[in-house]
Image (cartoon, rainbow over all chains, first blue to last red):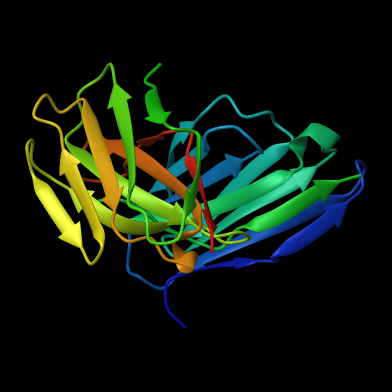
Amino acid sequence: ETGVTQTPRHLVMGMTNKKSLKCEQHLGHNAMYWYKQSAKKPLELMFVYNFKEQTENNSVPSRFSPECPNSSHLFLHLHTLQPEDSALYLCASSQAYGYTFGSGTRLTVV
Amino acid sequence: GQQLNQSPQSMFIQEGEDVSMNCTSSSIFNTWLWYKQDPGEGPVLLIALYKAGELTSNGRLTAQFGITRKDSFLNISASIPSDVGIYFCAGQLGLQGAQKLVFGQGTRLTINP
């Protein structure tokens, strides 16, 4: 398998649930990212990891908790989310120029 | 913070027409990138521009890196139905390590057959 793979593709969760999004890249890239994409808004950077160390947390609420165990895997742990957190969550990786994105997880919070 | 102004926000065209969209910024970028996003998928890189003034083509797509490094345009010639989607410009500052891309708001392209 190549590229950036995100699972699950779709997720519906209640506000009291705990769930995790997974991202895996097979490109040998050193940096990985989480982005949030809401309707009619620009892509919002959430977290940046470089060589599995977090280098940026873009003022993201603590109900979103990232984890990067190695340079190939990135998780986003979710708990007590709000309906306004419903969005497409995109993972990306990079080495030098530009990003390679995954297909995203469509999250719906009910 | 840094912002990219992308226009137009949406376009409705006939199949076969040419398309033009652009991005401007108040900040200088070292690299400009153009992405396309199909429904239910992540953005896919179309063209990357590395030098001010650079003009690059990829099939029916042509993009230019503005001489001031604060703007870029993307042209699509002879549009076809599979060109439908959302097009994003992005500016990149750094050249190594983890990158922060700044994205435009996107241009939604709709094609009438």
